[in-house]
Amino acid sequence: MAATKNMYEFTYIITPVLTEEQIKDTVKKVKKVVENGGGNIIEVDEWGSRRLAYQINKKRNGYYVNMYFEAPGEIVIRLERAMEIDDNILRYLTLRMDKKMIQHYQTRKSKAPAVVEPQPAADAAN
Image (cartoon, rainbow, N blue to C red; front, side, top):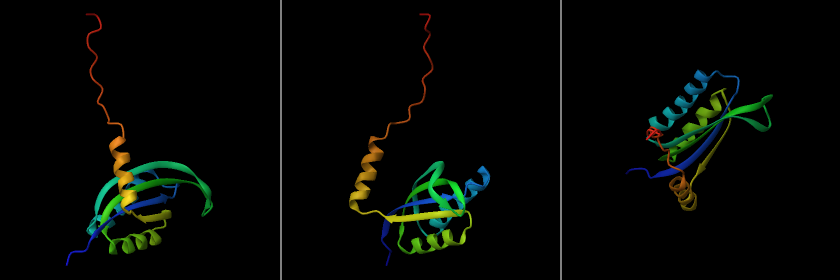
């Protein structure tokens, strides 16, 4: 019997003392945990370095990453365990999206401005 897949929003904060390469590796590692568990990553949005509301482990900044994915519920347990073990992760939050949240996400995505490629300028001399 196939497990039903739920949609999740997963936000996590990476310690700011890492290099860009180490941050990319951490993001890849989180993606791999989801994919290896049978999940389908929909979107990964890296918000970048931001100031924390309060100090965490004597750090005032953190690198925020927000990810949307579909997966069976069992993957969340493995994903959160991986976050607990990883010293580079300061905090994380997993939300299972209900119908209202999914509808809001789809509406927001449909209203997002399309990325338009710059067109070469026509001869202004004509």
